[in-house]
Image (cartoon, rainbow over all chains, first blue to last red; front, top):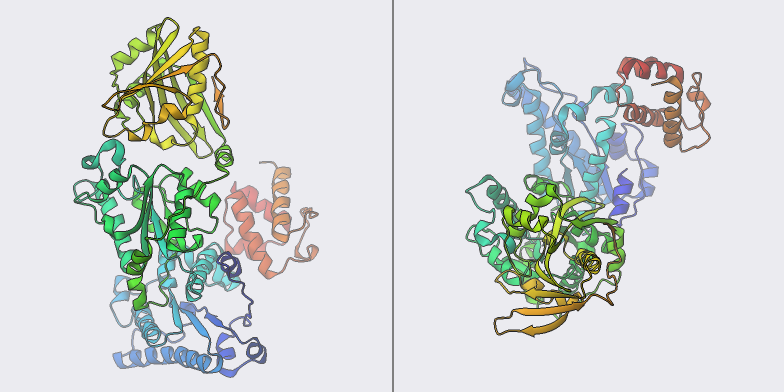
Length: 543
Length: 79
């Protein structure tokens, strides 16, 4: 089991395993096979069942102290002996708590209690760790409490098989040990790359505006994000370098980070990529600019599709499967990316170092197989004329969408109902599902018919499906509907606002011809329907 | 659940645990019939069977079951 986790970290181990319960004898009296093997790392696993001389309720304080010293000395002598003999690294667990408390709650505070005894013994182990640089504690006390002590110390496994923990807990133990070992071999992660919207704050800064983000002490969701930012700030103090990879306008990203309640500020980050490039392309740039291998990074993003594209490009990158904000810290933390086995002062300066190096030549990355990636999402869309059950959602979307919104025309529910019931409009909605689930109704296009012309009043899409070619599928369908209505030309309008800069070239990209542009930046486009070729190649469309 | 279905699912579990596609268990199968069935694999087998059927054997059962037939009787009594 340990081997699997180590191989995953690029470490190929060979093992020598002591005979059952013979570690002490092997260490103290030698064993020719072990001598020959000459280990680099010695892992000693013990359990509280190995503690022989627990205090008895009748013992005086002096006796209990003697018992503590003699239990401790047994281990310390063994470690000393191993160090002299092998010059190896020792990984030793502390003790998990016993599965019962003879004195109840007093067991922890009274010197006769076993929990009290174990805490004191553990403290002595830690002292040894603090004075021996090649000695590391495998904290199963913490591990077993996370796992659940009652389950961890399932007594069936002890009495039946002499397993000190139940079988399903072993992967957690092995993973924990592997994390210590990979850290010793310098294979820790070094940098965090963070998304912004719904990762560092609640909400979408481009749509909701800085003032409406969830961050800060006022509301519970804001508190959660404050705690997440505090956690990340603490990582930075440990020498982890921070970067941003976000689909946002750059100004919006900075505005969010300059929110008065944002604990992380723009200057905390070495590289801020806030643009509309695919995230794996941004990731590639960040790695090149920092001159770090992709496996040195941890990428934190709330969007599973973004995690998927980055993971498919960089399989060895740390990409925690975060779910809801209140779990982010725990999930990131339990992955053990940043085990601090060798805590050096240089680590603390790492951020400054990278800050200096950050101004290297930038390289534009392109993901050549982007289409393949999109195909791998197995997207299915439903694009149809408005249906009564969706009218409310359509009205809501028309009022919420700010970034991907060509005209920023708002519709009330009554307006939408009027459009839906009129023959003078082509009005379609789009729903999109992919391997990660249902994105729901995410795009709407409305155009009014004037003879053989169609004028587009509204074209909106939710940013969560950006760069999925959904807009192409919508256009294909729009043209098909237009052809049915004997329309020859479609006219598109772009009206700039503070928030919709990302679609200023949208119609050009769709193959429209720019007819005119005024001094305010309003643009007017046309598209011939007759010779139109379908553009979507990656989404299966249900009409 | 029918007995045959339990045996079918048990076969899959045994084949996975012992990594042998040819295993066919019946009610008289014991550890003597399967070469790799040692004490260590026994633990893996018990846990795999528990997971397959969503049950937990208690210690008394693990220590007294003599063959696959008895294991199946216990499974039937639980599901």
